[in-house]
Image 1 (cartoon, rainbow, N blue to C red):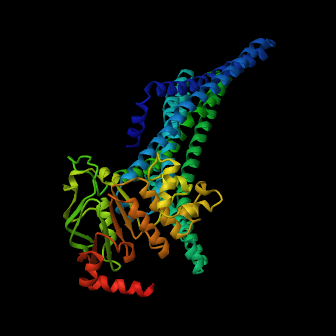
Image 2: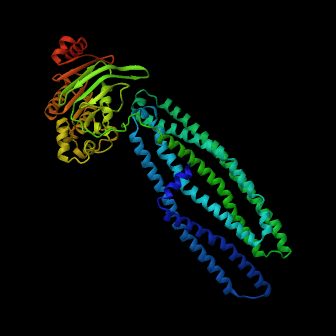
Image 3: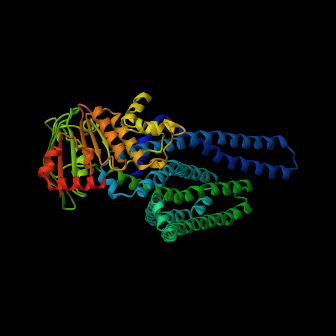
Length: 576
């Protein structure tokens, strides 16, 4: 599976990769020639000593030749590293981008059931394991195969009988490596899963550090983390034990091969069937051929890790979004009218919305209110197509929602959610997120409408102020107002405020509502709030109760006919 994935990338630059592997072969050839040069040098030294000659120039040629081979190996090694290892980093980058783009397309339900730590482990540890397979795994695997057969040829041409004796322990080395394949795969998968849990725990502790400190839970949380760390350590130790057993066994049988060469080869030298130089060369070749046998174990380990990680990433890539475009959906920019017809939506068979009918005309100012848990925010998410109704239909400009592309719906809507999320960036860039090509003048105008401009100008770096992670340097009300500015800068046809004024004071709320009234003329504005003051002048207000529309009408009409609306309004007036 992983091999096919790697080959698919190599096909994108076949000539470059072919050159890389040819250069890798070019490194091995001088490596194989060197023992024969050493053999001739030793035999020449012995012959010279025997005949009492002193021809150092011939010996100098051997020395220079070895030096030249070393330089060639260094140069060739640089090029294959640049090409093959460079490709492995490109594969990692491209695969990460592919995974990230896929994550952006997944539905909200996926992120609800999947831990962030698990996703982060996929993007870091798993990607690194795949890259190592594309680099070391490929290089060592190819090099081991070529070097084994090439060395075998050199050994056979040198002394076939001694080669056969030397080969006795080598199949055992391969069998040892193959034996550990399945065990290594299971152990590494367990280590990766444990790492995901550890990463998630760290993320959770950092996110909830204020709560942990407020409730003085540092010690229990530290113990919980230590427990997870011990489990991670235990699984790694278990993996190391397997790996640590495999390599000593490989070295043991490699040394047995050396001992066989010494015993058999030594006898052949005594009987003048083999020269001393040839025996030394044979030892060199035995040292070379042991590497491919060892590489079987190393490549097996790296490949199993990479393949396990690749399968984990594939599982993530195989996740399908719950919300997607119908085959014949078209891009229709919205004008602003929305109709929800007989909508039913539930969570775990518990009805959240039941037979809801809402008709919103283009350019209307709409309010939606109700008690906590009545399903107000679900309506906003349905309109945005973050979720879809299980029964009923939604119409945009009298067109069925399934006939319109999701992108067209979301491009036409400015949304301010309950949770005010800001990126760890400047105020200017956070607002510009709503409209990437916005000028500073447009950003300032949007901030004026959101009643945040004065507060920004009081800051040291004004619009260049970095807000910190999730806007930690700002108050709750300031974050909400920046989110409003980010939404309205898009100049959307539909503006949805989902309890987006809950953290601002009453006076600021009135100012924002007044500004929005002027700004959003002709724009369909939907305000979802528990504060009736947010939409007291709305064209129409829908009152939700237990997932149903209890009543609808203007503020004056609802005061007369809706007991729920009337009671909420009275409570809020008393609080004022």
